[in-house]
Image (cartoon, rainbow, N blue to C red; front, side, top):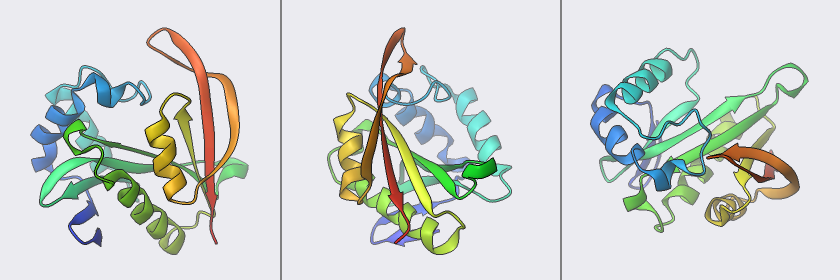
Length: 170
């Protein structure tokens, strides 16, 4: 568990099932996420996700809790082979919690934990080019824009650019 005031990053719990489904079943939440994050999002999808993260040997996917309520998720996807010291970060919040600085705070907490406790020296993120809010979350946490990956993402039948951001361990 990682805490900072009333914001907590913790292991997912079975009790998160209903809130996870309610918050994730929102087109506005899923539109800038990979297709692994389904829309619509059902109780069966929540069950699959909770089983998957519950089976992780080294948990890299954490629930975001604010003031005692489940509000979203954050996670790392470790890369392998010659990229093994790099992890890709991803995060989402339920729409009622947008605009409060919670995503930026959660990313900062995850970055601090990752560099202090895990073997990664680089954290990167791919952001849909039109998702300016997510880019701003990363910039607030000292991620550096590295490149535009042209025509890199296809979502909802539309191909678009992605922005690559990264932060290196200080």
